[in-house]
Image 1 (cartoon, protein in one colour):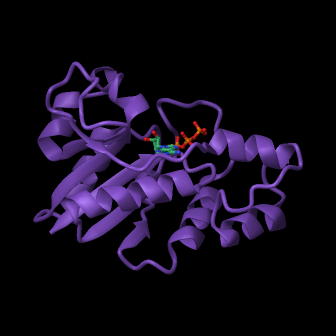
Image 2: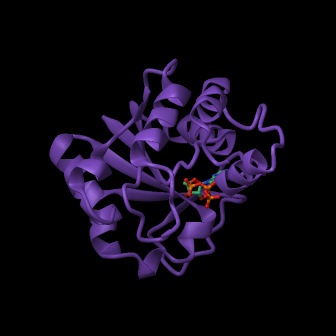
Image 3: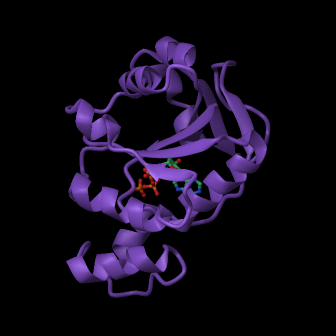
Length: 186
Ligand code: ATP
């Protein structure tokens, strides 16, 4: 069994996340795809949206796609979400599975400064969603794959909502309705 895992803040999930995931699925053909929102990210200290709301938006985005699931593993672990601990837990939950940990090209450059990079590489194959197949990392263990990139970020979504601008087609309609109903990012 192959499990492809995407970590992130998902504040909120957007079509950039979904389309790059779909394009990596075409290459790796996983049996299961897990989106793992961070509880407390070591990389970002400004997440204001609750874990529950970020998780709910993931569930709404993924509900029609049984192979794609939101995982609350980092909330269960508690504290700062370090990737190696998340992978240890996933390995415990799925001892037979081959785990792939997907990261964006922006994160590949700093990979060697993450906590316990060797442990991460022991537990999973680290795959980089990239503009090209060639590596930009010092670490030769990272595998680069060319995936579809869409020019959108969660920051842009939050800023557009705050400014009263349209986010139509940048995120799934149900997620847009949820943001409106909850008054997020105002
Ligand atoms: P923010 O704007 O708040 O920093 P973000 O849009 O980068 O958020 P995250 O949840 O932090 O989203 O990202 C999770 C992962 O998705 C990261 O590895 C990031 O590189 C990747 N990612 C983010 N936006 C895109 C995009 N448009 N296309 C492909 N991958 C993306």
